[in-house]
Amino acid sequence: MAAAVEPRWRQATFIQDVRSRVSASQLTRFQKMYTEPFFVINVDPVVPAPVRMRLTVSGSQQATYVVTLQSTGLFKCSCKDAIMTCRRNGCVCKHVCFVLYRVLRHEGLDFFDNLQLTPDEVGSIASRASQIQIQEVDRSNPPHVAPRPDQLHFDFCHSKRPHQIEAGDDCPICFDALLGSDVMRFCPECGNGVHQTCIVKWMEHRSTCVYCRSKLWSNYRGD
Image (cartoon, rainbow, N blue to C red; front, top):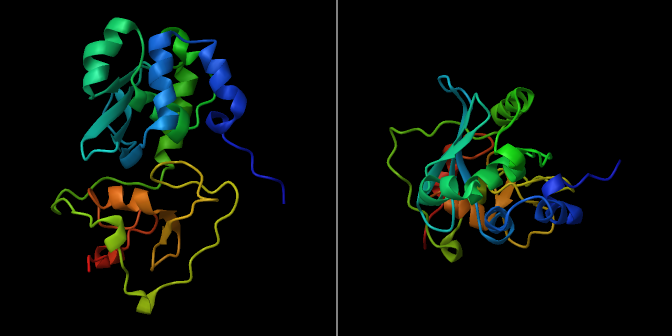
C-alpha cells in the first residue's frame, strides 16, 4: 500500500512558501491555523446564490463564526477581525485560512494576490465542501452541554469494535491527523474515531455522531 501523502498545509515547505508570498498582517493570521484550535461545527454546501458554501467554525471558546464563499470567489467571515480589520489591511482572517487550506485542502497561493478564487476554483471548492460529513444542525434540539473531558464515559454494552486508525485518516471536526493522537473517542455505533478534545467541542453544539448521525453520543454522562 502506498504511503499516504501529507496534505499541503502540513508539508514543511508550505509555510515557507506562504511567508515569502504574503504580507506580515496576513502571515500572522495564517500562522494561527497551526497554533490555535479550530473546529468545524456545520457545513451547508447547498445555499441560495450568490453564496456557494457556508461553514460554521468554532475555536477554543464557545462562540461560532460563519465563513461563506461567494460565487465571485470572495470569502466572508462573521468574526470581528474580518469585518473591522482585515478589510482595512487587505487580508483574510484566521477562520478563512483554516477553512480554505486545512478543511478544503486548497493548495494554490495565488489566492493571496487578490484574496479571490477563480471560477474553476470556486466550483472545485464548493464540490469538496459538499463531500464533508457534517450536515445542517438540527435547530429543533436545544444546545448540548458537554461534560469535562475527565467526565466522559460511555455505556459500551452495545459498542462496535473501534476502527483502526491509519496514516492519512483525519479528524472530521478539526481536520488534523488522527494517527499518533494519544486520546481518542470512538462512536459505539459505527466505530469511527475522533479526538477527545474535538468531540467535547462538538457536543457543545451537536449530540449526534459526526460520521453516522447516531444519537448514542447523547449517552455520554458526567459521573
